[in-house]
Image (cartoon, rainbow, N blue to C red; front, side):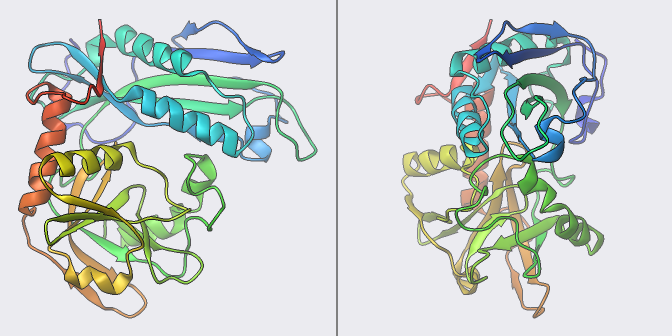
Amino acid sequence: MENIDWGSLGFGYYKTDYNVRCYYRNGKWGELEVSSSEEITMHMAATVLHYGQAAFEGMKAFRGVDGKVRMFRPYENARRMISSAQGVMMAEPPEELFVEACKKVVKLNERFIPPYGSGASLYLRPILVGTGAQVGVHPAKEYLFMVFACPVGPYFKAGFKPVKFQIAKDYDRAAPFGTGKYKVGGNYAASLVSGERAVKEGYSNCIYLNAATHEFIDEAGAANFFGIKDNTYVTPKSTSILPSITNMSLCQIAEDLGLKVERRPIPVEELSTFEEVAACGTAAVVSPINEIVDRESGKTYKWGAEPGPVSTKLYHTLKGIQDGTIEDKHGWNVFVE
């Protein structure tokens, strides 16, 4: 195992040994190729550079309490990448190709998988980009599917501690019926200015509202949002929200724990009625929120200084399933032998 101070890892790029690549040419996918290069070469007229044909995924591999290595729900990531590919007209990597590539990258970089109990994990970044040359606005005929990996710590420096968010009404992440439900690069480019501004003003990120009316909560930065009240797990329903695999999993865990689950529009004014609120996603896992401030009006919503009991139970249950300390009764984990 690599000599790394696992406990001090942040969430960022860390060089590992290998990545895996596969090219789509002449109407079909080729064979998986292993590379030690951190660079890719492409035509200057590649559609990814001009027309944003770019999608990616984020997922993690864990070394469990039993020493075995698990990937968490990789087939769901594969299906979401297929959906993203369809959304911006790219060639779709087959599910089995996707999962095989991820397994291969984990195995090739096994010495970078953090030990159980370190609080760190091996983060996988599958990407899909249009490499074929086009000058007119058309989809490419050639694509690159690639997976690389790096060990990471918590997404927010606080770890599993409450963070502050800012509502930004002067920026929208995505429009209704646009690309918001796809994990494509342009959605993240659209969030950079408001996100960086929020950080400079002392917040972890932005709460984005629905673009049409700014009445309802859409997303919490690059994560999904959920609130807890009256023994119910409530998360937004919107055509511009990325379907989070973590949120999907938490909905099931909430039901397993005896909570009701509601996926519906959440008016901003409803924030004051929640007992707990949090952001969730592959990178963030569960990040409790203890303060949300409307940048425009200054109105502030506050919760406890420590994570709430339901968010804590959801977090530890999800982590336990990923680490092998809690039974994976839904068969979410895929082992890397």
